[in-house]
Image 1 (cartoon, rainbow, N blue to C red):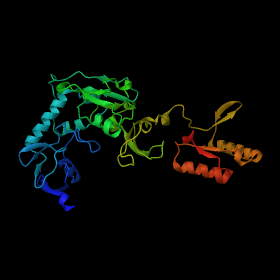
Image 2: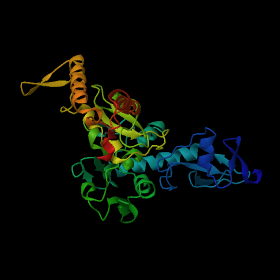
Image 3: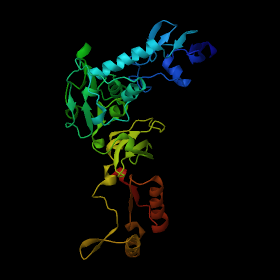
Length: 354
């Protein structure tokens, strides 16, 4: 309804928004950039990082991610004072943690790094307020945790609580002593974490990262290919990343798919079979009690002969086929069609029922 529309200006441009929206939401809808760190559209608003501050009505500084829009308000997204405040916040973050990009797996894919470069902050030499916080690279075989790179944005906490409903992450202590904890201050591998990896995907820095990426290549060396998860029938879209050698190193949920960027632990980590040394790459035929490599024509001819022999001796219902979740829908359709139309039996099933 028109009564729910609010008209105001951002950087001298008249825009409209719906009652209840924030300045950041309306700015984003109109292609106006406001930097953020703690904000993410999938979780509730935090207003903790203070990077998104804007000037309202020429005087007040407000966090754009939490400030509701009002009729005829004027918003300035950037001026000398705002830039100075943002640079000060970034300097404090750099002083408090260990944000050396040379040995960080998120180098090239870090929102903090992007803003530091944008506002030309650093180098920071004062480390008097730096805290020694937990670095846990070994307790979990899925996730690495380095609190020295944590900026307390609470994205991981809200992702775990509001999206995954696992409630593993939280914070303890107060003020400058505040830090991230898993459960009642356990190591991540010893906590109730189910290794879904969604917190890593949402982390804006290198505080949380995947074990699979360690030593595989820099972020800018990885190439992305979007595909469909092979496991259940939801059809989640996944962005698979591989290094220069063509080895898969990580999987990120695609925001455009039906999963809206979320994937389960199988979709996140269950792709290592692709490059397993145990995976068969050529057909094997048993000769004199031993398996030997064969051509596809030789293997398929042998299978056809054996199936024909069974059908002649015992009938079509003596044969059954089993389809696989690791095949495409089209391949599974062809297998059941082959079973029914060619062999002549309804004995076909799927591995999901085993």
